[in-house]
Amino acid sequence: MHVAGAVARPGVVTLPAGSRVTEALDRAGGADRDADLGRLNLARVVEDGERVYVPRVGETDIPETVDGGTASAPGSSGSAGAGGAGGGSSGADPVVDLNTADQAALETLPGIGPSLAGRILAWRDEHGRFAAVEDLLDVNGIGDVRFADLRDRVRV
Image 1 (tube, rainbow, N blue to C red):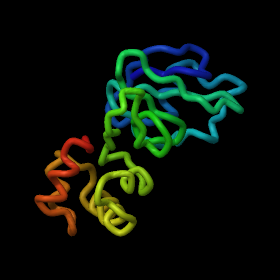
Image 2: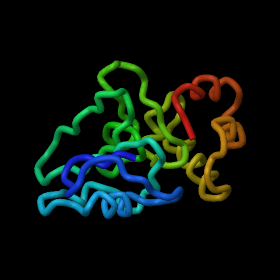
Image 3: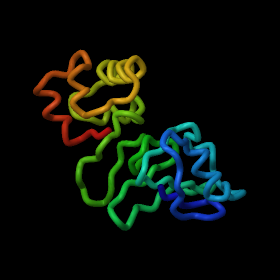
């Protein structure tokens, strides 16, 4: 994974599966004094290939990645932008990670309101990680039609 922003040694770090943002920061030499750690979810599990950006106090613009990869915004769930549902400048619909998304990120998906987002989170709490996007079909309220609308907007 790539750690950028207000850290001692920005760059690519290698972590074991199941590692958290706090471990990524440690591997990058720790946060700088002006890092705004309150905007990060230090307990979030990171994924291989993602980028975590550590903002500085007062910083409001999160830099986009140049290579088209995803950047974790402060407190996000793995994609660029607020709440983990963001995207890039391409105008494409954002992709939401079912295993890390919070209620707000899920509600950005088509046809997903507060109630259905809550059922998705409850399914994840009960069953653990989604192993495949198709696991969404096991969530009460997601049938074939709704799944077809979501298929390209979610990942695991």
